[in-house]
Amino acid sequence: MLPAPLESAVNARLGVLARDRIIDRIWARDHTVWQPEPAECADRLGWLTVHQQMFARLPAITALRETLRAEGATTLLLLGMGGSSLAPEVMATAFGPSPDALRFELLDSTDPRQLDALLARLDLAATVIAVSSKSGTTIETRSQFAFFRERLPDPHRYIVITDPGTPLEAEAHRLGIERLFLNPPDIGGRFSALSYFGLVPAILCGVDIPGMFGRLGPVARACQDPDPAANPGAWLGAVVTEAALAGRDKLTLFLPQQVEGLGHWIEQLVAESTGKHGRGVLPVEGERIGPPSVYGNDRLFVAYGPLDGLDELEASGHPVVRLPAIGPLDLAAEFFRWEFATAVAGHILGINPFDQPNVEEAKRLARRLLEGAAPEPVTPAPADVLASIRPGDYLAILAYLPRDRTTAGRLERARHAFRDRLRVATTVGFGPRYLHSTGQLHKGGPNTGVFLVVEDQPGVDFPVPGEPFTFAQLEAAQARGDVTALLEHGRRVARLSLAELERLAFPE
Image (tube, rainbow, N blue to C red; front, side, top):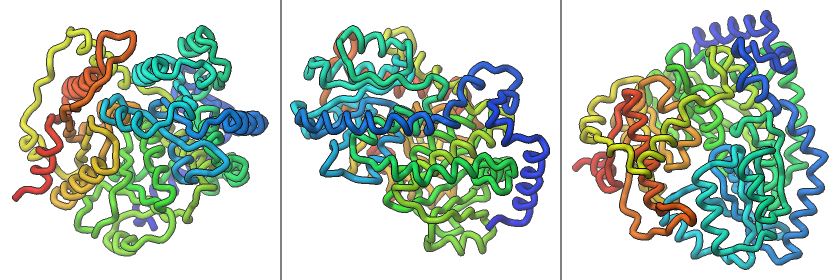
């Protein structure tokens, strides 16, 4: 239920969208919905129909899965960042392992402890490695690829997913990798869930894509409805954006446990698409529901299915969008609904949702740090940064640590302690993974973020083949490059260890 002022604003916005024929113009791929120039916009709308192209290719991908199993493969290791890995991870995790398919493993980190743990549980002799990168130049993926090629040189054990004409395509040809999937190039990474980037790993790991597509079809058709009030994507985009314009720009998601990974995917899509030019919507995923007293007036809640505590939030005046409960078979439909909602949100905010103007900054600074050409960033004391938090701010914990259950649990306990004490939205991101997700909003969105960058000494390390640095040095440079970029944008940021973070979260 929406409070009356917000409901009135949403209804007025729906009327404007209808008057300006925004739905029809999106489907006509009219770039002027977002900006006068076509660059990085007109050539980024292939997501509207890519599922139709992919449907005819599903049997060939399924046949590849059977071939790989016949060759003795039991595990698929996906190397990829951001849009090249989030959707497959969501789908494979939601459906779980299948006895007739490959077991899913993901490496989207440069942390050597995570790499070491992965090596310990992998049987490389029964592993197929999918190397996935739209640009073909992603430093994390290229470094991981080089690392595993030293240990598994057989090109027959690799699959490459990239855009046509990338350096990764050229390398695949040079190495003799024949299992090469060239994605339609008119799709941005975060909008690529229903393209080869999402579907190839998912099918190989036993995800029921035909079943998902059966539920996708009606939603995709409904998103063509020119009446925004009857269009599930346009309506959702209008609600999220009007709430943000009214100061409720912390989009707080509550998802059923089986599909809770969808929150990570929505986080990237919405944050990277809207967080620019001082505007943006911050998705908050993973926060457990609390009493109304722990929330400020900057929240919009979106909940799938029933959840204890929603009635109390509504009664206290918070806007709550209640969507039907979903399961794994609904994921493709939800991908499309949120993609369309995000496209509409970009129009309302007056920004191009398909570019990411600030993402390259941290990468550039990390390269300079690796080359010894940039100074070490100097940050204030963490307690001083925390003391600056005001209503409407958010606290982002950015952890350059191994993404394992123990570490994630410690970070989640800390974030909830901060939320309950400070009454601000909190997020947790693992580096460098978040750089391909919320990093754009951190630097390009509203200056309301407070950032705690958590670093510890790894204790184990591996060289990056062909490079003059190790994985630990790369991870450290990525952390410090992002800290420097945040400082250059006038953001409040501090560096600390995990133990220090916990002392601040749980003061004696």
